[in-house]
Image (tube, rainbow, N blue to C red; front, top):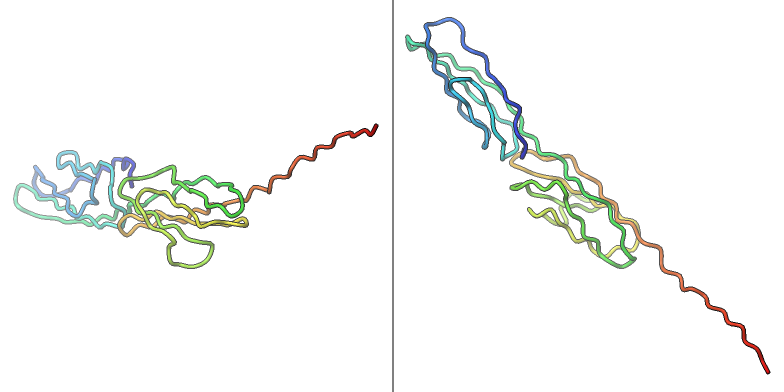
Amino acid sequence: MGTTYPTQTLPAVTGGTGPYTYIATNLPPGLNFNTNTREITGVPTLGGNYTISVTARDASGNVATTGYSIAVNVNAPVVANATVCSGSPATLTVSNLIAGVTYNWYGATGTTPLATNNNGTFITPAVTSETVFYVEAVSGTAVSARTAVTVSINPPATLAMVTTNQSSH
């Protein structure tokens, strides 16, 4: 998903009377089928599992159809951990953003997303202790693995002690 699909050449039909014509149906969005070379190429734009049908027809009108499976996966999001002051929110951002992908952000527990968006950015609630959030990428029926993102707390600042020598007269 979002990267070039490795060129796949489907096998030629055998038997029958040449020349042959080929047609492919149900390709994932973004992929193309070259009827001369039997190659599937392109950049898939929607995740999921697809069963494509390739139909070959010979010069005598004989037809053979074969199904092929293509799985279009979506990569797990990459997000840097963050450190904030206690009581502050953190802004978490997906660095490998893919157009058309939905990002679901979760707390350490629970199955309901805290936020869902397409921009890959999540502003956490205020945190007072180290907290782990999770993010997954969704495209079509494909769901990535969840990425854990840790928000750490900066230790409180300590005031410098200034001592002076006081002399009495």
